[in-house]
Length: 493
Ligand code: AHR
Image 1 (spheres, rainbow, N blue to C red):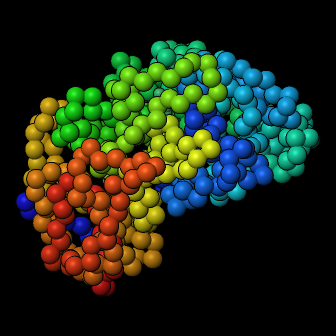
Image 2: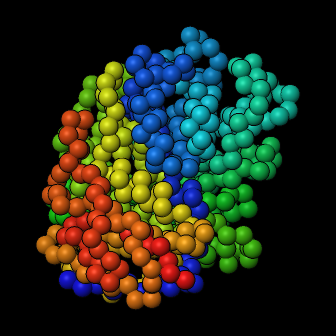
Image 3: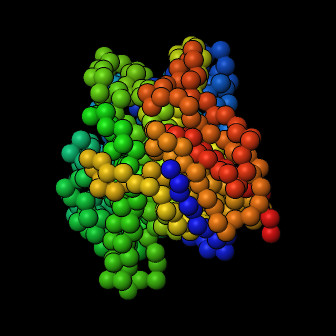
């Protein structure tokens, strides 16, 4: 199978906003308790956070972490999670039928982020919460004034403000599953007034308003328009969420889903453009794809851990090699739309739908999807290049014509290197790839390949591991059948 990738280092889509390499930690399942935080664990530091988990997060070079939810956010009272730990209330947590002990809250999370050199992306509760509580949280986190909540922060041991820049106005407020879900009009009003209030207190912050929970929501489109019309002057980003599944075991349909993600981004970006024109505004609203991943294995197995426990082990996806290929392809989609997508969060980071897994009181290990995220985050920084691909295609249940090739190209900031991220979805044939217009030498060629689609990594055995290919040149580039690849080219200028 032959394919050609045309690209020109002068032809740039956009400088990539590094925040597309963000992730997400929710008070859900074991993401926090026995995930990042386990005071009795042998690797725990003085504040109770696991070092073995931190050591696996660091190489991912995640820029921001969205917190504390998710669906959890819509029932969360942030005031439960501050002050002396022994005085914090234990609450029933309705979103995930769990018990929330409130041992990790705003201060613990923000201090941990600082120690990890990761920026937070905090959510304010617009389910049971009010604009007043949202602006009080902002005051607690960011204010330098000597006012009640800023002084409370000082009393709790933190003199300096945290300077949290990025904030989400609620979560998936259109979803019937959401605590205190809202109609488009109800949400738009509360989001607008909350945004106004928050920017009055701290005009330096950036705000993300909720888009539809996913593309197939019946309200998709109208919801986005309503929110934008109402909130336009006060918000900076509109959110998109999408998880892909393969309940039917139709691998080729599943592997084409990055193209659905492309359509989704184009649709939302065009709604933003339309409302911009309608408003005759100078300002662009950009996109925050703040939940994306593959998510279905746990549901498919029909597991239902006991309800109303702390750290209920839910949604512990065991990702396979096919998932790694789709995650790699979805990252390409984000890069190829980096002109409009400025933030994206792999949902999530630890234990729940996550690249990193832990055992309570035991080891931490990495899943298949860790690898495409790691390499793309590390080397996919700089400028995204326009690419024109001619590659064989296939037809499947969800798409008449899906390409066997997913590709993106990134010119490094010093312009010395081009990194190509390439997925050959064809399980039968290698792909011979020509690259007219690029001259240089291959500096690194990393592949994930040579295993079956259903291969998984566990704490005992890592079957999906990156491998370096050394014997290829730019003129003889061959992508193995069913493979994710990163080819870094040192340019000859
Ligand atoms: O990431 C898991 C859940 O998926 C989040 O809580 C919610 O926002 C989405 O439906």
